[in-house]
Length: 235
Ligand SMILES: Cc1cc2nc3c(=O)[nH]c(=O)nc-3n(C[C@H](O)[C@H](O)[C@H](O)COP(=O)(O)OP(=O)(O)OC[C@H]3O[C@@H](n4cnc5c(N)ncnc54)[C@H](O)[C@@H]3O)c2cc1C
Image (cartoon, rainbow, N blue to C red; front, side):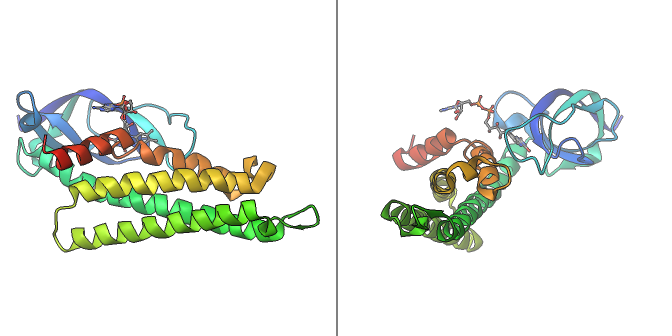
């Protein structure tokens, strides 16, 4: 009667608790990627429900929920693109999502570095600013070097994507590199802050927690390596 009937569920959906509509990958055909289509599903549809917000380590600024489709009625007009071509839409979207995650990781690392520089100049230990200790100075130098290298790599990949050049391998590399940098820099930022870095009132505590998802969401570090290896080796 002009509707798809959708059954299933999907967990870990960012802003899922307050979303009005979701772009959803559904199986409209047989097994494999050619059986997938994209549907826009309204949260007001019959058979649509959502969990309470899930309790998370970080990213408290956005909710994350589980969505349930129980004989959910979706008008056929809500099909995005062609039936059976959903996988290609997902892959195309991943390129942009991974680029955004590179930018988030670079910005997280940048903020952690800025906060650390400020704190190292202000905090006095043994009668002098901790920025005077070589152990701290070298940490800051390494952090700044990594932030610079990661940001430039992301910009280069972004420019090539903008120029229409396929960057599936490179965006996977850039995401892993940016996340490796933000992991290291947020860890060191907390270290430079000492006990204060463990306290909620300091930004680096939040950056450290919020950062943890970046090498998991949008394709894990391991999946990025699989993509890179497949492109390198050809199988
Ligand atoms: C806060 C948050 C928000 C999210 N938002 C969204 C969202 O809005 N939309 C959405 O669709 N998803 C979202 N996700 C889901 C996220 O994309 C997945 O959690 C992520 O892709 C990993 O999948 P998984 O949790 O099923 O891990 P699993 O697939 O169970 O992986 C577990 C471990 O095994 C490894 N592994 C799995 N398969 C392989 C393999 N083939 N080779 C090597 N290692 C492998 C993984 O790398 C990982 O280390 C969100 C998750 C979180 C935590």
